[in-house]
Image (cartoon, rainbow, N blue to C red):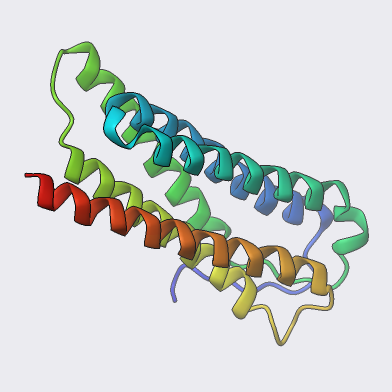
Length: 172
């Protein structure tokens, strides 16, 4: 739990920073899944659907951000540093794939899917921590609810990606 820092008296821009980082995770995950839908045509529909759902997650967070002034009183926001690390990892992975494609290298399907599973579990953990660790301290249920919804959605994504991984193993 080193990555969690609980600070009282958080300012409005701290909430905006947290939400911006969460939105960026969803946007980058969507971009990664669009790339997968092009790389792995046999699973294109699954990755396209996941990409669209990540866009919906970002929109949910954007809507929360629009109401941030009302939601920012007496809230504790841990998990920001972990979200930044997840986001950095996604961007680096996309860059790695782009470089590999430019060099004509193959991208291993199972490893790509495993990365996506890890991504969903990391994002899920970030939302979980932002929700659960705050529970005794938070005064704004709407923030808790947004992160609870996202945690459930990320769990569903992880389950579906795990199913794709099982199919991939049997196809080898």
